[in-house]
Every structure is written in structure tokens, then in C-alpha cells.
Length: 208
Image (cartoon, rainbow, N blue to C red; front, side):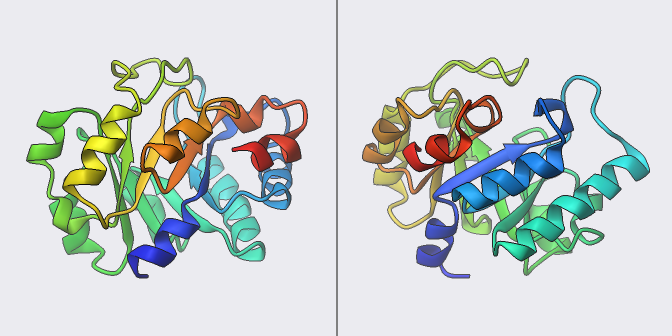
């Protein structure tokens, strides 16, 4: 997938696991898909996440919805789920399995990498990844171990250095500030609670 098409696919990037939902996660994803998200990341982490067979079974159900709606399906850092779920790719952080190893094992999969500061950017093999998750842009309560917010200026700085790689802003993004993230140079915004906590999901997705 070329950068232009991937950037379009990453425009409204929904991240979710069972721990983020106030209702059945399958119903949540279906409603989000109907509302207009363009990509989905299965992230089963945090408080009381599913594990083992239960995690795999939920992943399969969510994968089916992504096929049905032609959504990009990304697994969060669990490389053992990529093949069983026939995922389009994997997203990893700086402390997860190395990008070099993932690319060796899965040469044709999409790889997303989180970068939170200049040092991480310098030490990251940008040439091996397909897109960057940039942030946290704003303060977020979704991740207990979230790093210090970097602001939209971080997006602009990376865009100047890497003008063609797709960039997704993440961290504290909602319907009120998503536009500033896009204006700073991002190709998409990644959200969790902006969708899962929305009183009107269709309107929320539309306003991202």
C-alpha cells in the first residue's frame, strides 16, 4: 500500500479493546464502522484485559467487522495475533518488539511506530515503518503510563523532517481539538474515548 492510500486509510483511526467499552465491544466497533471510522486498532490492554482464547475470539469478531466495512485492521504490539487474525499490520511502541525484527518476520505487513520525542525519533528505523503514531499530543487519561504531552508542534516538526510518511496524532484528541492536529500536518487522528464515551457516536466520528 502506497503512502497516499495509507494516509487516507488512517484518517479516522479508532483504538479499542474490551476494557474501553461501556457496552459490548463488537457492537461498539460496528457502530463506529457505520459512523465512518477508516481504521481500527485492536488494543487489549489496561485494566482487566482479556487474555488467551478470549482475547483471540474477540479479535476474530472485530476482524470480521473490519472486513465487512473495508477498514484497516491493526493489532497493538501482540505479534502472535497478527497471523491468526489476518491483521493488516501491527503497531508498536519504543519498548515493544523491535521494528527490525517485525519487518524480518513480516515483510509485507503494515508497521506503525509510536514516537514521543526527538531522541526516540533519532533512534527509530523510520525507513522500515509505514506510519508514525505521534504523541501524546494532549494530556490523556486512557493510558496510565502516558508520556508528557508534546503538543501539535511535534507533528509539524516531524512533518518537516519526513514529508511523505503518514503521521497519526494520538493522545487526548477529541472532537474539539482534532482539527488543530490535522492543521499541524497529521494525516489522521487516533482516538479511544472520543468515540467510546460519545453520547452520539455518529456525530463524534463526523467531527473528528
